[in-house]
Image 1 (cartoon, rainbow, N blue to C red):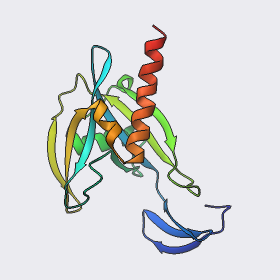
Image 2: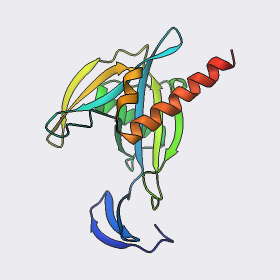
Image 3: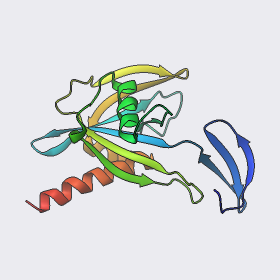
Image 4: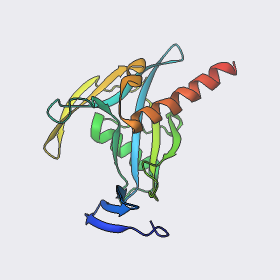
Length: 176
């Protein structure tokens, strides 16, 4: 936001709501990380770990990514990603070789930080297929869903994460 003239409308410790060119944008003040856990079956993507929102929150948006912000005591983004994963599935994926960085995406034109995307292969990690939890008085469910079900989501971050992961496996299958 440093070079773009904006009008600050609302602010809290994590985000600003700004007006730019007669449009409203939400801009993060802290680095955000999304984690996409997945499992493999015979070398193919099998299941994807998502958050399922309760119907009371939304009737259209069913799945979303596991996400959170980088804490000041996290040494690296990968440490943050592993902490965020643990907060949602109650287990760590401490082997760095099963993690993959999928890049950053930006959700609007004035975003400076973007959202870092990480995926992790949890095929050999004992994780619950279904876990209910409350965060900020909202009910979420962690679920492992079939990878082809992700295409039906209307969450742009989940869809872009999945497509980047799918691209990795598709390109690797062509190279064999």
